[in-house]
Image (cartoon, rainbow, N blue to C red; front, top):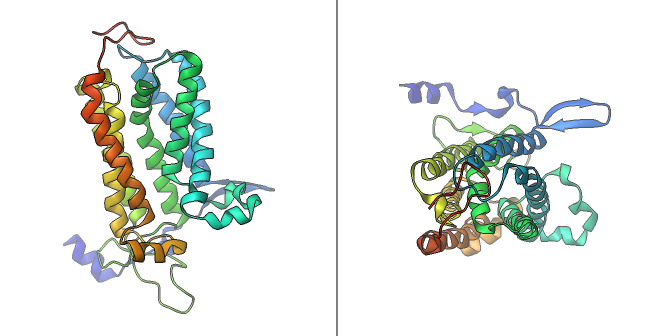
Amino acid sequence: MLAAAASAAGPIRFADLGLHPDVFTIGFFTLRWYSLAYIAGIVVGWWYLLKLLAQPGAPMARRHADDLVFYATLGIILGGRIGYVVFYAPEMLLRPLSILRLWDGGMSFHGGVIGTSLGIIWFARKNGLHWLRIHDYVACVVPFGLFFGRLANFVNGELWGKPATVPWAIVFENTVPYGIPEPARHPSQLYEAGLEGIALFVLLWFFFWRTNARYQPGRLTGIFLIGYGIARFTVEIFREPDRQLVEFARATGLHMGQWLCVPMILGGVYLVVTSRARRVRVEATGGLGSVA
């Protein structure tokens, strides 16, 4: 009945939602929802990480968490931007200064994963910690950033989905050349927020709090890679490819995002399958004590 009513009323128009990329502007300073999403993801993720570290067998102490946030944030920003340039916009290499214009948008999650991973390895080696177990704990907090980031994509009216006739389809602005009627589209940003954010968080929450996965180095990281890879690969079916990669998608049959998910899923399967063999006695660096 609700679906029929929504269909009768016509598709939702994005312009009628009253959303805008900017939170506010004071003089030359503009705060954007996308920036706020990054800040929220880091702050909430740090808060949840402290809760995880308070449990028995933690791979590092609470005092390490503050330093880890710095290394992870650096990895997210550098890796995300470099990944976007390499995977999605290599033409920016001809205009190096444009790479520094972060406020214009353009971040790759896959690049951010690589950058964050390198940052964690650097941090772990510097402090004599187990880098793979730290990855396991960080993997559990990443869905917060994904959730807020995808909501920001929706508020920005970007990364929309393919034309659709579903009752919840939305007419976004400037998706086709001027003069052509705008079609209603899948709000794929919200699909991703639900799958990559909420569903992936619940999955990792279960394995961390209800199983012994955190004592098998690499298992939680592997579950994250598999879960994210499948979620992203699935949502890309309903999402329009980036404009500069439309021909690439037609030629290869898959979007760039889907191709990048394939090695993630395979790597995740490897980590999960081999995690039991890596289990050893866990001496806590933080938390309540040692765990056999």
